[in-house]
Length: 187
Length: 101
Image (cartoon, rainbow over all chains, first blue to last red):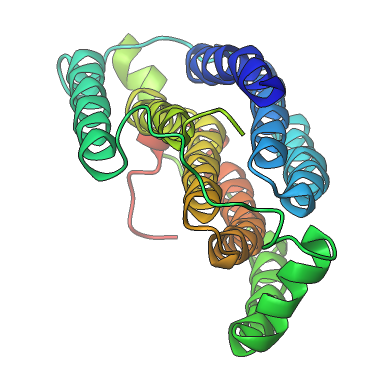
């Protein structure tokens, strides 16, 4: 019963913080709301029997990734977004209509595939025997050992790519002189 | 556990849709990137929920891999946004309108 209560506490926070994030004018507010959302997702992982992903979600997402985001926002300056003429007419309403269609479609898929109120779930204590981390490591280092090793190559390539992009080229310091979208809209 | 798995899937669907709408309506490249992170997390939630439903840990392993890939993606994406900002003095996606560097 406790998990149902926890779900109904966390689900509204999760959905509202996500909704507020896409509407927030200020990029810093958006980042902070996204951190709230990541914490609620971490609690969902805990309810679903995965304490390992609960911890990883908080350390990697709410910790490392969002700090990186806030760092870049501070670097670029957190100017609030100025509303200006849309490049495509009615883009906002088309986006909302398509979003509503996507929700309807996925809800129908969940209803057909899983059923909206089915609760007869398998016993997860046997799967998590000896601890979730131990059980997960048995799967990870037996069946998925090769993908795990490939991941290390991916991380090295990402680090090198970020260094190459972030490098300041001494000869190409000048910026490109084409009017910005805001100036075009202002006429 | 008394919560039906479908509730988690529906929350996941809502979060994914909000991420999609965020990508479509926002212009700040950083906020668009955050919306993409939201989409990735929504899919992670669905993966873990399916793992619970099927009674094995493969879904959790896949969610773990997707977190690692997301971390790598954020590093490269933010570096691209910073170098774009250096060129145009703007993080607006409407300003990334030239093919030359």
